[in-house]
Length: 292
Image 1 (cartoon, rainbow, N blue to C red):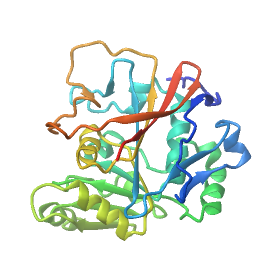
Image 2: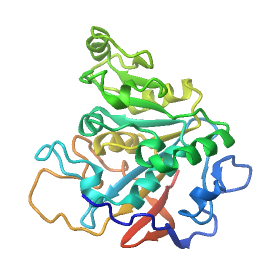
Image 3: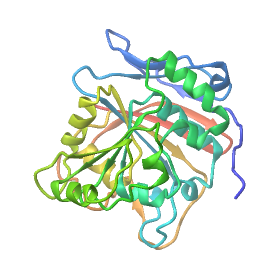
């Protein structure tokens, strides 16, 4: 399918007076190389939390709030939701470009059967510009991929998990670790059993990221993983692309407001503050900061 919004700049429409608090707060990002700045006028900076990795999340949503099509269409990913928006892929690359680690759930990995969670995968023509930016920021050549799976049901030969220059850590349970360690693993992959039970707690995921030295973690879902991090009050910012389509049909759909398997009881929801709005064609790019 032909990409929408090919090459369009992400035009700034509105920004809060202080998108990043500057009083003694270290920030990641800032001005970017000219090849990237042509597509993203201004700067992109994320304030860093001193005591733990800052967590930002990135999703694309349809106008009616669908972020994933669910088991009824198991091969469908963010491209189907965005209408294969090239500008959405550029935003994804920018956020990966400033992240130390990209956190994804096993379901997201299985849907992205040929994907790799790096800037170069979604913007190959700008791979050198992203590499130069990461070097300027003092970051490793590629962000570390952290895959969260309780069961260990992953294919170690997945292209996004076996690229030799992309560090991969699988965060799992003891049972999941045993399952994975019974198979040949690529040299770039480590398996970490960070749970004593049958699930992987959100806090343990962040502790694992912190042990790698990460200051900025990017969560790319799925919705269940995002919901777990959100319920644990560990998400600091959300970058949400609003794609101009309405799914509008009865299916097993995932929505950010109704995260399957996660209970948002009284007091567990999070209020957020809109801090920036950009536009590329008919796509809107919204940025929210969560209240402490």
